[in-house]
Structures are given as C-alpha cells and as structure tokens.
Length: 624
Image (cartoon, rainbow, N blue to C red; front, side):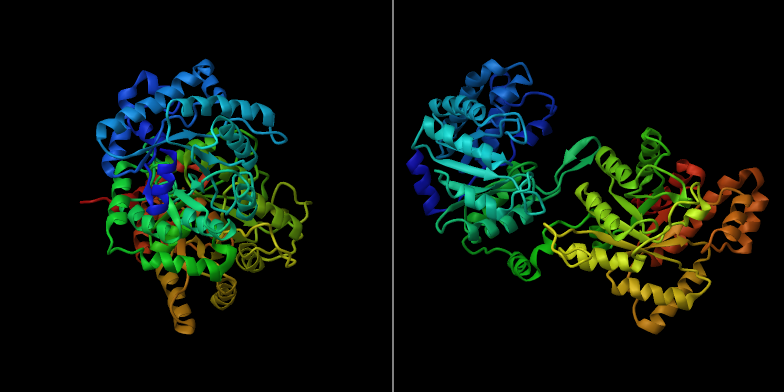
C-alpha cells in the first residue's frame, strides 16, 4: 500500500481527516484521560470517529496513537502497554476502513516524545531513538500504510524519529509535519529557512505543517517552505480550526467548515498534495473540504490570492495575527473594558476575583494600570499575563514613560510582547512627587507621542529605536490618552493630531461627565481636520459620594464634573454609591452612539459597582 499511496498522492490531492484529540474531548472525555488507551478500553468511540471522517470524504485516516509512546503512556501508568495500544490503534482503523468498502489509507500517527532533547532538556538522542523505535515497530508490524509524524517543534527530535522509522522499514512512506507559531517560527524559535534546510536532508516522502495555527497562518508558512524546499517536494497542511477560546468551561475553535472549504483550494493551489485538519476540526469541516476539492468549477477565493501578494509586499510585519482588541476595533464591535490595579504584594487572587466579576458582567477587555498615583504595585505585565492565561480575558497594558530610559522602555515592551501582552496604552504616568517615593527619578527619554511612534513605526516594523533590526517584528495595538472635555481644546487637538500621525489605533479618554461638551470637541475636530479618525473608548468613573465628586473635580487634572451632578451626589447622602451607578449608566447610554467602547474605572476597588454599570451594555445588546 505504501507505493500505492505515493502514486495516488502524485496523481491527485488527497484529503486527510480532522481532529482526534479535541473530538474525543467534545464527546465528554476529559483531557486528563489517556486518549490513546481508548483504543483498547473504548474502541467503539474511536471507531465512530474514524467512521465519521470516512463518511465525510477522507482519503486518509490517522490512528489514535499520537501520544502512545513510552514516556507519555508512563504518565498514566501504561509504559508497558506501548505495543498493545499501538497495535490496537492500527487494527481498529483497519476494521473501520474494511467495513466502509472504500479505499482509505491508514496513517499511523506519531507525536513528540513528551521530553525535551539535550541540551535544552535531559533526553539524549539515543534515548529518543529508542522511544520512537519501540512505537514505530508496533505500528508498522500492525500493518499501517504510512507513518505520519505530527506536531513536532524540535527538528532534532524529528531526526531521531525518522532515523528510528527507517531502521524499522526502509519502504513505508513517511509524512513529516512540523508546527509553527504565528510569528513564523517553531515553538523553539527556528525559522522556516532553517527548518527547510534540515528537513530536506531527511529520507522522507512528504513535508508539511500542522497544528498551532489556523488556515491563514499555515497557508502563509507553507508558501514560505515551498520556496525553500527542493523543487518537487510533496507538501502537506493540516491547520487548526482557528485560535481556541474557552467558553463556558469548554474549549471552542471558531473557524467554520465553509472557511475550511475555501482554504482547501488555496492549499492545493499553493502546491499542497495532502490537506486536512488538526485541533478543532470536525467531520463537517472535512465534508466542506471534500466538496470544494471535488468541484471542478470552483477556484480558491480571490481574497486568498490577495493575501499572498500582501505577504510579498508588506514584509514580515504582518506575520502575527492581530489582537482581539484590534479585531474588535476593525469590525466595529463595542469594547467594554475596565481598569484594575495590580496588588501591592504578590497575592493576586483578590484582584483576579474582581476581574472575574467584571467579565461575568460583560467586560471583554481589562486595562491594567502601572503604579497609579505613583504608588508601588506589582509590575502590570505580570498581572496582564495572569489575567489572560487564567481568565482568558485579553488585557490592555498601561505603559507610562516616566522613570524609564529608552533601554528599559524597549526591553519592557519586548518582554510584554513575549508574554502575548500586545495591547499597549501609551501614557505619561503620574509624577513620583505625589506618590510614596517622591525622591524616585522621573527622568524619561521619550514622550507618549514618541512611544506611539516607536511601537508602530519601529518595533512593529522590525527595528529598534536606533534603527537596528529585531529578530522578528512585533505586532502591538496602541492606544493614546485623550480628554474629550479639555480645559485647553486647542492644545488637546494639536497633541491628538500628532498621536494620530504617529499611528495610534484607539483612544482611551479621561472620565466623561459632560456628554454635550464631548460631542462639541469631536465636532470641532471634524470642522478643522475632517472626519474623526480614531476609535474612542470613553472613560466612565462611577461617583461614590459627594466628597468623591468634589475631590475628582477639584484635585484630579483633566476631570470636570458639572455642578448638577455634584449636587446630586451631595444630596444622595448614604445612597451616594447607588446614585453614582445610576448616573454612570445614564452616561454610558448617552455616550454609546458616538464611541466604540467604554472604559470603566472602579472607584475604591468596588468591582461590584463597576459591574452594575457594565451590565447596562449587556442589557441593551440582549434580544428582546
């Protein structure tokens, strides 16, 4: 069957199957279980998945053996079951194929060992060889038609896997699939150029990509590989169904089956011979790919051809996918964000609990302040990282320039980017003279407008402040500060123009209490410069009581509260917080027609009160 498989692959594009692991998970099996062991304990479940992909039109099905090596099975106390589980995986797939009465090839799937090779880890090359030899021997002896090495991040480990496979069989076809991240490198940092050079030397039959990225990223990278690999190299591509999101405790992949149908044609047009899906793809995705491949009149979408031209002309700056915030700004989706301050110490659970409250109320973003009022706090990018990873809620990092020289500015930004904290609010920051350490330096090398320029015209283009190239470009989404009710409108407009020219993507405003004045400021801009060019996320700070209102009005620069509102807060007495929430909800409803989001600033850490304001947006959006 091996030579027959390659002959078929050369004669026409073949369609693989979709996800195994996430499909098992979707059927109620928790990730803590050993999925490979299901070949023996629940063969009906695995057989049902194989059958669904064959019915959807797959020419190739992959065995449920991705993690069936000694290292990974040992995590479940099954180290001595390598041969049994792998043999069962191939036999089960063969029974399903035979029952289908269709010509379907069985690809024996082999994943990484689960350990890092030396010098990064403690696994020697010899030990890796032994691990793969044991698994591959069982798969080949059980009668697999081909071997498919999936989701490898380390080419050195892959070399040992191929060496072991060729020791077992010199004839069985081998498909290699490496995984890349959105920055165009493997998870270990290898570029496509280096990967192509090393893979081209291996005795294999097909080279490709799978996992980690959605169709767009895989298509972009496979095009790069195709230009770097020797002419005539057979290519494969099996992308994820987009970027996973956690919804209601479940992991959801957003890419639709229709979307995969379009990309199936684009992959073939790019020279791919074996197409399929990885995490999050379902039989429905495969069915749409089958229909697209079988329709002789259908061609790849012109938009996907434009993508290739854009890659050539725009260079590496567009490698990374945009942030969720950037996507919301582009599509016009209303942004609901709230500000939190990191803790004074290392205990983060209280802050995370507050953020969870805000998310439940409807916040789709969280702003993390940096030393507000010049008070010492945990570094904000650490808090951003925790929020994004524990609560799956994207963040906006406040980045004040006070006290940072240009070296620290760039180092801190690159550190944030490495943690996937890529929404930055460029701001001056509070002077240290008002805080706990008045003697601390206030020196800085760049002002907020310059920081915006550094981010958008420097780091995002792959060069640092001195014009030296970075290893790869960043992709920050950048916000600027704005006062919609300024004391000096002319100066505010002048500075705003510079921020826009330097590349600001959105504006976070000071708390707005006079909607008419805010609209007048926007009208003045449009009368002088044309249509308003920037997404506005309007600040809303619920007043707590009369004293709070007076303090903000008299002592916080840039905040002006009308006499009427301050009078209402004074008259509210003990009901001040309740009245303040009501006023804030009214302000949100008045602001919503001409802004693209609201930026809630909880007073005195009262996340519950901020949540009540946020809920007004959710209530308005709810179906009647």
